[in-house]
Image (cartoon, rainbow, N blue to C red; front, top):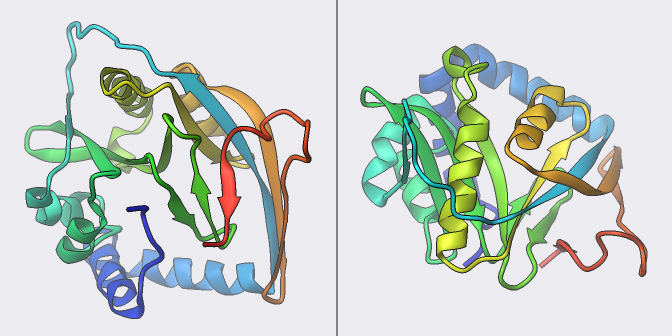
Length: 224
């Protein structure tokens, strides 16, 4: 099943988990940003892809692994975007979470799906082509940034995907987020196309590639 749009109960649980992990100040700032966003906002998502290839392990200082349902408390504590229950509910045969761990603490988490993920900015599901996977919702703890953790995780995810027989990985990064763009580039991702979206008083407009344009046969943007 895809990483679905969450209901009101899970929204409340996730908000509480975020406050506990990152502080009430971030929740307040996030709420303010959401209000401004609804009134008028816009950005461009740079969609990138990478051919999945198996990468040999060599001298790694971090532990990379696939998260399990038993990691709910750890995820809530160190990442903070899900409660234990909402974290467990998101895991499925087609949607996984991968983490980078050091000394019993999660430094990074990234979600991967082969079916689709609800994307708040687009109010739609982003779905990868059959046989590919979509990478989304990546987070690196502030004290672990600048150490190559995110590119390391992406390369490991690509290797894991290749081992499962998947062809390509896809990721969408906001054009206004240069650090994330650099990270995906270091991992080997290359830009394919751009998605522009604008929101004005609740009205959302999304520009997707027209038939024949690069990327048209890539990710699908679907409301349901």
